[in-house]
Length: 260
Image 1: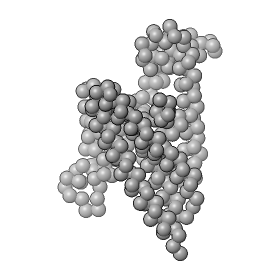
Image 2: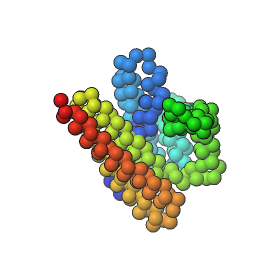
Image 3: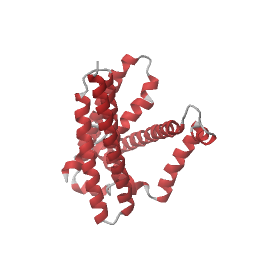
Image 4: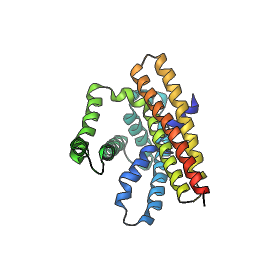
């Protein structure tokens, strides 16, 4: 159904938890001045939204017969459609297709690089401690953390499971977005600033993600895709823990705000 799956399908061009990880994990470390965060972060998402609109336009350019020639390949579909658009400005279709395919490949490689770095950050932060044990110290090593991230990705690719778990990426992505909204809301409450502008969309995307996970569990069970059922149940459990923790944290924050 259009609701709630639309909200966990249109991600990077509208709302994306992955982008919140990028902003906090990499972009924030590349700023010369904290004042640059707003124009860079907001401007980056505007450009991302523009890219999403462009991708949507390319998806409707081809006729049904031309679409069939792409065999449902998303890269082929985007490249062929974009080449048809650039043909109107004098660029040959073959050259346009080649250029767009190269652009998509470059985009994918940079995304993989970023995702690997973020995975390394997450593993390091998970095992870091003021007085770590030898095991925790080893697992927080940046080289070992990177190796673990790459090994997990390689396992998914070579086992053929990567395409299997892709349908639940949207729900996982928006669950991270809900966590980002919760974190921002808590910070705003603690510094005694208005927080509803972050809390309301956070509650909305949390509810939508839960609904999408519930629908996914139903659909995957009906199709006997039990691996996806297990992962979806795991994500829903994490979402419930996030919800309970969020309510408790917000309650404490508002009580602290109300106290003189």
